[in-house]
Length: 177
Image (cartoon, rainbow, N blue to C red; front, side):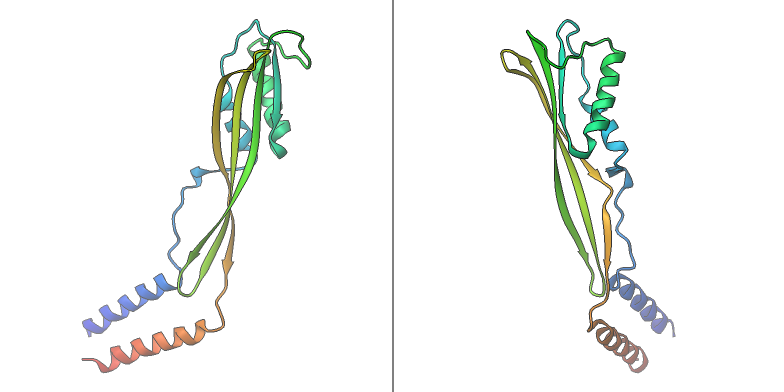
């Protein structure tokens, strides 16, 4: 009797693995919401600049442009920096650019599949001193947005396959001694 019980528990464990009942654990701390991304960019890229040189911001980050520009200007004004639209002499240009990498991650099990669409936001930061054009600082930052997840259903042959596996295991448990 205990041999059959152990076999049955093993069967349940195998079926749980095959049908995708165990959920892969990925830390939610690895992902950022659309509201958190501009804050992370400003915290990572904000630095100490010379107070006597005017600063121009050149921020082209798609849907994050307004939020990053506002946060960056707020921090610069709090630290008493001078911002200009069109300076005449020597100045620093702070440039932040952005591009998006989309990855499709598919987790396949025998009877199920899960598809995740992960968006990786890559930001490039550069401080250039003009009129020389000397690059003073260059850094990159990659942040993942919360993934969109899709669950794939069963295929047409999955019920037949499940029935064959369960029937075969029941046959083995009943007739093997």
